[in-house]
Amino acid sequence: MLCSAYTHISMLLVLPLVAAIIVYSIIALRHGIVRRYRVEMFKMSVLFSRLLYVAGGAIVYARVYDGVVLLYLFSLITSIAYSFGAIANVTWADYVADNLHDDWKPKYVALDSMISTAGALAGTAIAGAIFSSSSISIATYGKFFLVGGLIFLAGTPLIMLLRDIPRKEPEPQRARLERPSRGLYVAIALSYTAIYIPASLVAPYIKQRFGGDEMWITMINGADFLAALLTPPAWGALLRVLPSLAVARIAIAMSVVSIAAFPYIQRLDFQMVRAFVAGAGMIGLWMSLFSHMIRDVEPAQRIGHSSKVYLVWSALQAISISMGGILADVLQKPEVIFMLSAVGLLAIPLVKASRGDGKAEPHKRIA
Image 1 (tube, rainbow, N blue to C red):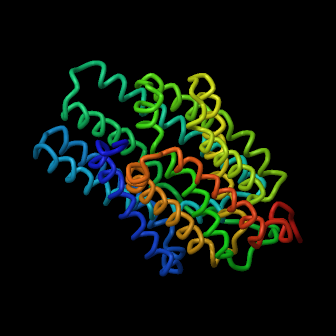
Image 2: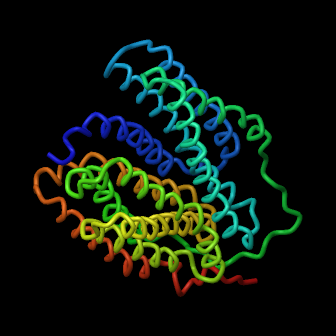
């Protein structure tokens, strides 16, 4: 079976996403209260999530329990932390939308994406240092999570200083969406389904069908990370001259085509090129959606819309992680999963038909 060995890992990854889905659903229903207290909720959610990550790392490091019980206890703690992180995601998007000048928003989206990727690479470097300096054990993993949690916690006092920025004069408003289209949520769901489900099969497919090893996976993931680090300025430049959802269509095409081509490329160097294109498309898709949230949506609708976008994104990750391997094992032909990812191209006309792309011209200003 292609993915039977990944069952516990899949469950541990899905639980935090389920917690986030619940929180995003609640926020979508009660977005008025969240908007009213967004700064306070953002600061408290960041503080609590980081404290929980430290606590989770300490529990694993101390090996309070053994075996699967310890793993699921850690997953429960990180799930609660992830749910606080969901609150932070939505409130931060609303804060940026109201407090950052429109001209700076594409640049901020690019910078934020680069910083996130750099943080992930730094975490990888810390993990390498910790795991290479001692024999690998459960305590080693606990040490890694504990150190990472403490690093995040150290930056929390600066976040506690966050305030809304007072404006002396109202900023000229751009043409905005009256209400986000349901078709956009369908398009987002189609896109991420077409990307995440086959992507969950990449590692086992490399080992069992290509005969590759961990070096293959590392090199391909490295090309993906490199794209996420290097391409945000280019996407930011596009967002300055094109509507956010027009950029999203370009990113969807890049992501879907590159993931569909995966099983037909058996050379490592060509796979690295494909992974770079896929990584560029993925970061471009997220940047364009985030830009859409902070630039093109009416303030009264923004938190509700953002929470739904995050909800769809989290739900598709959870479904993909748990279902990708099952579908591959049932069909016995994982290549079919990659071929079916081409359905994601249907998201392109759906995005184009969404309000705010083209007619509303969200990248232009009106007096």
